[in-house]
Image (cartoon, rainbow, N blue to C red; front, side, top):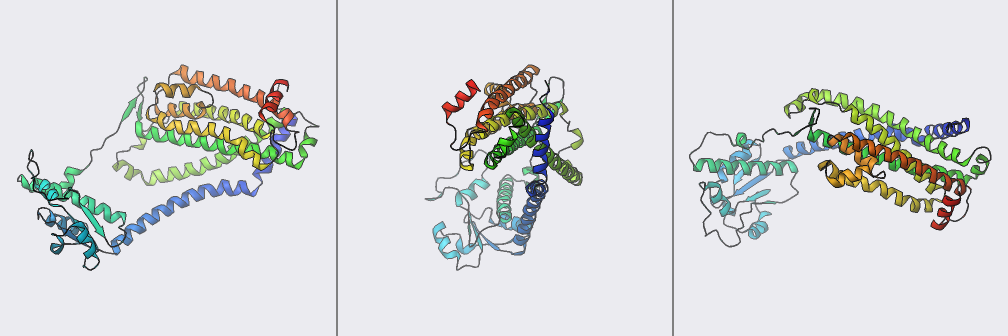
Length: 443
């Protein structure tokens, strides 16, 4: 039996054309990528502008070092970072509270208070311990006092200069003068590569990021377009046009047409988004290839997981059909927008919970609880694709997950069809649970 009869095709075409021609579709389809790119560009511009403003608005930094072991080194480091720095000899014997009260009357915009214990630790020989006479209240914490908010650029410069000066002090204490502390503190390039049973190499960080991106994409699709089905059914009931429609086609045909029609709108919209973001990604990655190469990321060495992408598509389709059937059945039991929020909440939670679970699954994709969740049909549309991109999943697991999901899709369609057949003509109050169960039993 072919479910896509001419009458179902007519409903699909009506749902698709009606929504594609709306201003909302055009604005969201073209506006969302522009908004995302614009926000990204704005964030980058503000970051650069903040750094520029921080550099132009020069501030005087006073360095109070009562031990006198790293103060001069700090001033040298600050000057290397193009920051105005001087030794604050008049503040060195003051406590933090005293320095705070006198800062507003001083010539310093910022005051770096270095405790005596920190100075001694910076100059200690390996194996030595700090002296006992460090003074009461000296917890070894360096404090930066500021008259106004400190930009993150300046804060980072102060942290880096303090670290480099401490390293230089330790090196000098053992007679080393010519080593660059920046070279000593430079991070070693490090990458985790997962090797599958077939010998395929996978960059763990990249594939984890991809797993999260896919999970978020599924969450977005199921939540947005599932709720759109509820509102599409509610619109028909409120306009009374449904009584005319069910006189010429069966209720399950109307339900199937709405599910597929709304899904086709989603596919068209996501295809446009995918094309725009793909072009932006290709342009951005090409322009930033040299920067990525310096960071140790070789784009040519990243293998595209085509098998996982194909399976992801099936999980997306089956997941959408599963939740669409549930949303359609829920929409048939209500008669107003207020009730729509209440009936959608339990189904929405079934989508949110697996999205939250994917955060742990990405970190431990082969954990027992993760494997179980990836087999549960209500969780598998989000959890199994995340596992597929994060690790090598045995064939029997993703196959069993797909079969179970398909069985639940058929079951949800059957249940939703029986609810829809009665509920679509119901007016007035929302149906309660005993009524819905009676509709399922007797259809």
